[in-house]
Image (cartoon, rainbow, N blue to C red; front, side, top):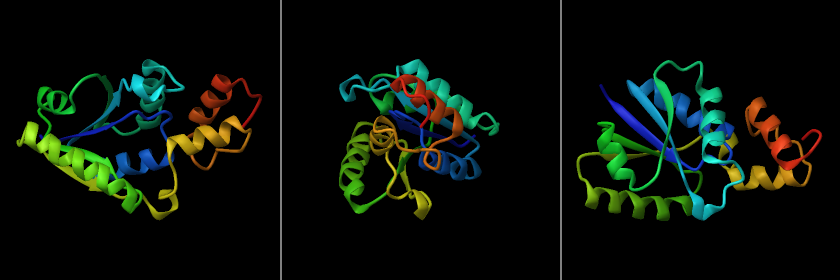
Length: 162
């Protein structure tokens, strides 16, 4: 079984993330969306809230599951017998950091590959940070996130509707 791990903080899970997961689900037998603890990033949503938002987003994809992890990604991938780690690239600016991480992961464990996937061009500008900022300022984020994520953002930020 070909298994891929798609790690990230997913704070919140966006349509760009969903696009990568949908396309990866056609390439791999099993895709695990691994929600990282990411305390250093000071996430808006708690770890279990982020996992629940991902679970609701992927519920119609039978070969995709959500999980949480803390610690080294290479250890998590090995524990789940993954052959690949998926990383989304939106722009050249993402590449340098992701390339360094891929090389370091390979140094730590050379038994799996990092696969870079670009989202659809309509999502290349999209990031969780930008979505949160638009939502905080009362902007409409419905074209950037699934409906349930939009509702969760409104609730978390104490807004009537975004």
